[in-house]
Image (tube, rainbow, N blue to C red; front, side, top):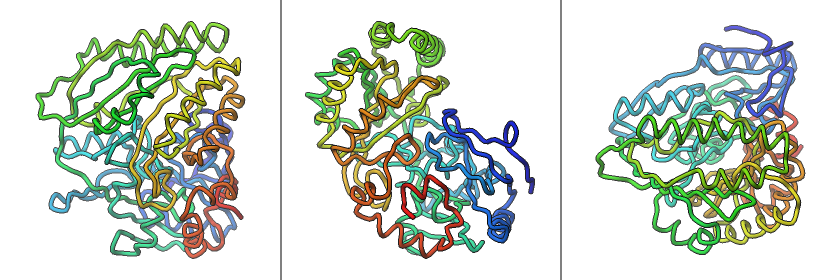
Amino acid sequence: MSTTASGKNGTWRNWGGNVSARPAREVTPASVEELAAAVREAAEDGLKVKAVGTGHSFTSIAATDGVLIRPQLLTGIRKIDREAGTVTVEAGTPLKRLNMALAREGLSLTNMGDIMEQTVSGATSTGTHGTGRESASIAAQIKGLELVTADGSVLTCSEKENPEVFAAARIGLGALGIVTAITFAVEPLFLLTAREEPMPFDKVLADFDELWAENEHFEFYWFPHTGSTNTKRNNRSAGPEQPVGQLTGWFEDEFLSNGVFQVAQWVGRAAPTTIPAIARISSRALSARTYTDIPYKVFTSPRRVRFVEMEYAVPREALVETLRELRTMVDRSGLRISFPVEVRTAPADDIALSTASGRDSAYVAVHMFRGTPYQAYFTAAERIFTAHEGRPHWGKVHTRDAQYLAQVYPRFGEFNALRDRLDPERLFQNDYLRRVLGK
């Protein structure tokens, strides 16, 4: 087990560059036993404990001045059970490695988010999700969990074993213990046909219910300062495989989505008045395309342009009104928004602190280029989201506290009661959890 200080001068930073912390020490355990020992040792030394994955959260959910646990040695597949349709993986496994390994075995998750750099435990603990009519977040695909609790013991849970822990720990915010392994439901590898096409913003809003009902996975990006969106529909397909050609793929995904987009962001940051014109050009640059491939190659895409993000889940029936208000706000505000707004959906699930807990949800994500002031835009957007009883993504920028969250999560009290039982001394506490879960 190695114990080191992190980054420059012992400072840890997140991917978005908006959060940093100076842990007292860092531990990279090579086994669950070593991790449990590190937790017991921290408790003896009076230090708080946090595990951090790849730092893809924009909140300070993983920040600590105590012991920072890095799970990068706890990776790989422990077991594939084809009969049960499950795979058990170590918590530090990046989603990218899991998706590729499963594909080699002829298996896949049912649904996934659009980024796959995160560790499986980091992604599920914060409620990472994609878009789906019937299929929900990554955490909703969990069948079993193993975690080290505050007393250093290893607890396993599933629908049958410790079901009350299972109901909450699938999206546990790092508050209930440190996840060491996750068992996911998987299915035989399948093909998806993706249809991407530009569509006027007003048409998407008018036809939203239809677009949602007719597609297994529907999402769209709206470019502020324009009346344009780019829509994406993913549906299962009998094949044959027709992947995006290498040249086209490079042009669309690397050059336009990462290369040119990066330059446009630099220009916009230096000269904000150019942003509406850039937005109009960007929204026109993307042309319609259709391709068929295995799930992770359709659901996920590389994100090399760094940004800061806020995302809220609103009741699905409130989506169109929310977006109309957002557009009016942007038009009247004098703000210059260079990043598209991303819109996705998820069905209701049964996880206590899931953003889709107990209600069909739609997600609206607003982004700003890293290094540009985002407060005015995010504050105005958040005012709209909260007016619709929005629930903030746990890993993205928001200003909500326990008092607000207790009103929009019917099972908030149930989660905190379990936390009192599993971590009475608040070993896994940090400033963020103090704010969102209460003292």
